[in-house]
Length: 123
Image 1 (cartoon, rainbow, N blue to C red):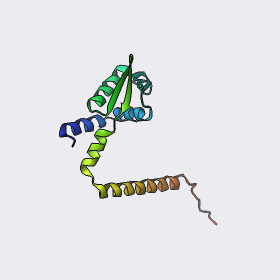
Image 2: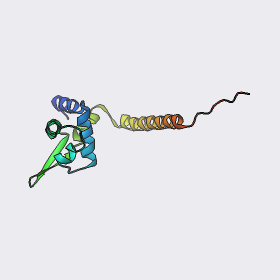
Image 3: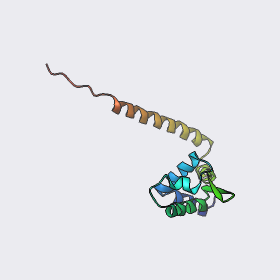
């Protein structure tokens, strides 16, 4: 079971937009290096390294040293542990279905907004 401190660290790390974007990048680019990550953002490498340190402290990033290089990987376990804490088998099933329904409705709304508007003709 996940401790309260671990949960606090996870939520705190995820509260920052840049750190969420870093996690997205690392998730989609496993084994990336600090330079790979910092090239994606309009901020200094030192600022990125501070964000990486917070993500590592929260155990959301794991690193592997290969020679002088440090490869970064996304670690889903802390998020999964938080998810598991408040869900059971039934709610997982329902959450999945409701998420699918939400996505379908949002797509239909987007499609409707993108349709050309019909104008009324006056006689």
